[in-house]
Length: 236
Image (cartoon, rainbow, N blue to C red; front, side, top):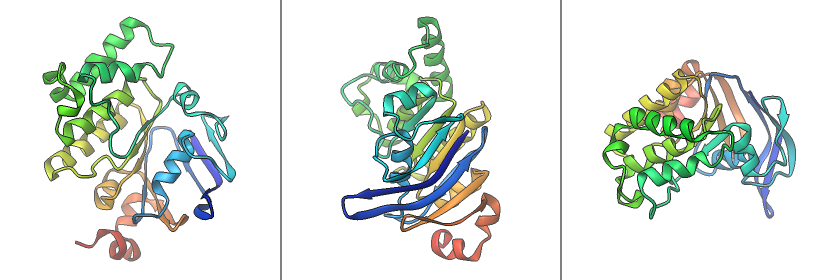
């Protein structure tokens, strides 16, 4: 579904990514793990069209999206849940969800209403807070809203950047359960996550980024037992 080939990104004179390559098959959960500054967020931004590339090629569903602007990438069927949630704090929960549907012009009014109900089923707390301002929600609820808003475009693939950041353990477990449910319903997931243990526990495959390079890759469960990964990312 997604193929990243020899991707390089610079911020001025600083190299953020160097010649990285990986792929995501339809129906998979793929996770990118690594320490702060490894290039994980930059990778997702480059894929979504938010970050300019120095070199490389990105294809999605067989189409070249390397130079495609973010709104066109969304219309292609990929949605991005950014680090820090980036919900619209002054809009209500319902209005935030409706805003997510604007990324897919093919949606009919009836289908949009169905998608809203689907989000309320997936995230019951959002239904309880339908008329509240997004900014009044807890951190965990805002993360759910950011995920629900992305799903409102009915994407084929969802890209998530640090969904568990700053959340209590109860919310972390709930968010990861929901990610598995989203994937089980047929949406491919590309996940960047600081909580490497949780990410590897639900992913099919994983790539370990170190200073802008892919240092390791393979089956997620096998990487959980890799001594190098254990020492760097899974130690208590």
